[in-house]
Length: 172
Image 1 (tube, one colour):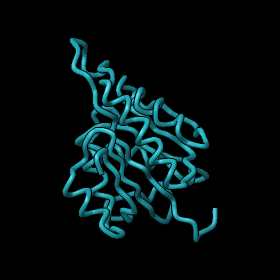
Image 2 (cartoon, helix red, strand yellow; image 1 turned 135 degrees about the vertical axis):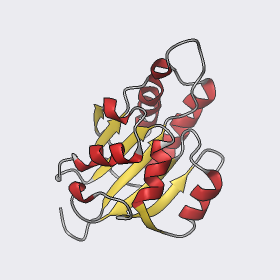
Image 3 (cartoon, helix red, strand yellow; image 1 turned 180 degrees about the vertical axis):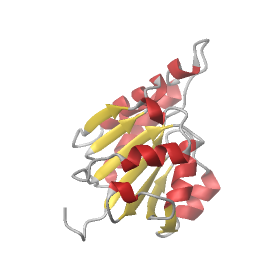
Image 4 (cartoon, helix red, strand yellow; image 1 turned 90 degrees about the vertical axis):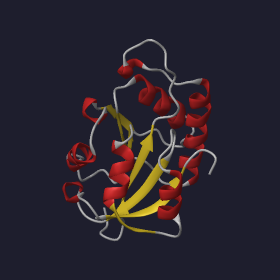
């Protein structure tokens, strides 16, 4: 990897989940969530970024979100279902990202709020265009994603290290 090539992190919140009488971890996507997950996948494809590794929570709604979104991408990345992403704090998510091998350039993390939104806020020391303003205004609704860029090794992921390059949410 060239020094001039930044690494990218996509923080992707699962799509709208249903509320059946099942444990939280087992909640499936609602109909709107299935639609929004595919749309989010198309928007991710539009970024032109080739994702090398997907780190996905083991919860049903995140696995379903990723399964629908990844079909819209031109390249299917290696996917790791990571228990530590479920209900993780921003600090716990940083610890997961710090373990990514340095040969990996671009990562998508499919997880849950408030951790995903908090992580986007914490990592983004700067922002391009109006991405920060849009994220602050919209929050981080179901199926939203933030695209961040940073230089350096994965062990160097820490607060303020990244630039918020883009942000998308359904109804954007």
